[in-house]
Length: 153
Length: 153
DNA sequence: CATAGTGAGTTCCTTAAGGGAACGCGCATA
DNA sequence: TATGCGCGTTCCCTTAAGGAACTCACTATG
Image 1: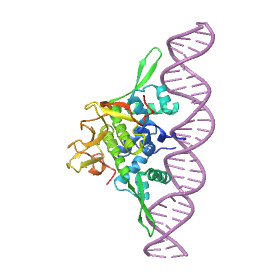
Image 2: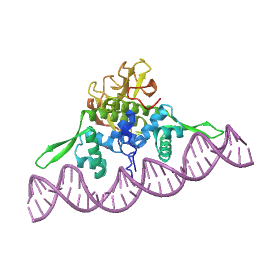
Image 3: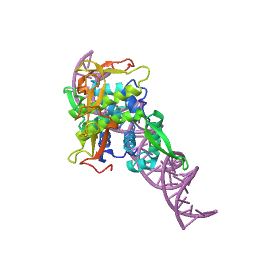
C-alpha cells in the first residue's frame, strides 16, 4: 500500500501516529517496557515477522523512541531500550490498557493488573488537568487554534 | 498484507489496537470528535481514500465505537457519532496530543490548544492514579497477572 | 420533463506493505 | 570442523491502501 505521510500534518495526533501508528509498534514498545528487549525474544513473544520487526525497530530508533545498545561486544549483541521520549510514550499504553480493560476484557476480567508504587494499590490511570487537577476528558475541553496551527478552524 | 489478529491476544493493548490500530482510525475518531461527522467532509478534510474511509467507518460502527444515524430521511442521509465507548476512546487522543505536542511540535508550538471547562485554563492531560490521585506513569507501576491472564509471566 | 447536483458509498486497478521461510554473518563452544 | 546462537536480510506471495470513476437515491433548477 502507498501510505499517506502523517508526519507532515499540523496535528499532534497525526504526528504521533507517524511514530507509533504502524501496526505492531505499540506492542513492540510494550514488550520493551516489560523487559523483553532482544530481537529474537520480541519476535517470538509477539509472533511478528522478522522482517517487519527489523523495520519497526529501526524506525523507532531513528525517531528517538528507542535506543539500540550493545550488551556484549565479543559476540556483538544488541538490545533495545526506551529513551526518555519512549518512556513517556508508554503513558499512551497505560491509557490503551485502561480502555481495553473497561470495554473489551469481558467476563474474564483484565489480563494484567497495575500496582501503583506511590500508594501500593491496584489501580488504573485517570486523566486530570495539569492546571487544576480535576478530571479532564475529551468532553471537558474546548479546542482553540494554537501557535503551530494551520489545521482546524 | 495479511494482518495478524490482535483481537484475540490476552492483552488490552492488542485488543485496543484491534479496534483503532488501523492507520486512519484515530484521525477519523478525532474528526468526528471535533464535529466533522459526514462522509464527504471526513474524506476531504483527511485526504483519505473513499474506499478506506468506508471500511473504517463500518469497522468502527461494528465495534461499537461509532453510531451511524440518519439526519435526513427524504434524501436518505447519514452521519456518524461517538458512542459512550467512542467518547472514552477520545481520551487516548488527548494523550497522543500531549505527547506529540511535547516531542514533535518543534519551534512552531502546538497546533491546537485545549481549554479545560472546569478551570477555564489552557492545559493538557496528566495521568494520575485512580486510587490516590498522585501522578501515575509507566515507571510508577508494577505489573501483576490479572484474572483474564494468559500472557506475560 | 430533462439536466445538473449532492451525499454516501462501491468497483476496479496499481502499488506497496505484511507474513513467512530461508539464508547470511560473526562469533563461541564441542 | 561442525554446531549453535543472536540478529538480522532476502525472496516470494498475498493483501491492503490510494485513487479515480461509477452508482444510486433523491432534490433543485430551467
